Amino acid sequence: MLRLRVDVQTGERDRLIESLKDLAGVRRVTSEPDACNGHFVISADVEPHAADEALAALHACDLHHDDYVLVREDILTHGLRAGGLSASGGYSWVEILGEARANARPVARYFLLMAVAGWIAGLGVIESSTILIVGAMAVSPDLMPLCATCVGLVGRRTRLALRSFGTLILGMGMVMLVAFLVALCLQVLGILDHDFDIREVELEGLADADYSTGLIALGAGVAAILSFETRGATAVGVAISVTTVPASAYFGVAMAVGETFEAWGALLVLGINLALLVVGGTITLHLQRILTPRSSR
Image (cartoon, rainbow, N blue to C red; front, top):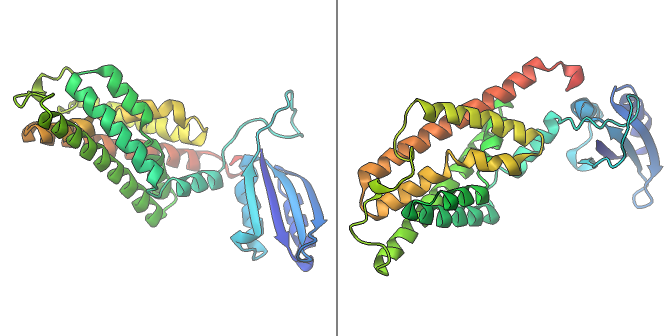
């Protein structure tokens, strides 16, 4: 359930209340005076499918985005019936867009987590450890900018798509750099033999692309956008990172030990995976938008 709060002047109050009351999915519209500025605060419960139309009503009243706030609230009661609050857990386009904007920027925490993922994955490649690779995928937050890229493309918001994709690429670069430094430091310290042969690493598919590479990435793209919509990103993020983090770490380690041919093979796998992840997620989100009736969005 979403909760809408709007700060309006006295002359706009009645018009906005009538607009909100006419919308299906908007209930419990209330109005209270604001003691600070003499305006009125209008509050309403908004079901997710009605959020876009509710915001359109606000914009029709020439309200600035600073004049309102829309937040999601968790419902704790059970047995809700039609006509009351919705427990469907739906997701509105305005929420998806807001979530995408929040995850499009390359913030410090994102880079730190990608660095940790590169550290663990680099060791996983060197040790041929599947457990370490899975651990690196669990740490990696690359799902969020990936999905933000898809949202930007479907919403025809070029700046959002470019910023999100740039954040995603920078994150992959961080994984490569850290994995490279890990392998290089281990060589300098004498822990990693200088004649280490990365081709003997028992991790299949990190530097060789075949038909399954594309199919896995497409399926992961579908799962990515569905998890992004339903707030299940934490669980699905591990599955998404299987197409990005291992290949990035493999590239870094291969460059550190001088295996440039293997490194470029891993980079090709990563490029194919990233492209098809975006394609799968974008197509999924686009089909949802065109196949879902406006009244149920």
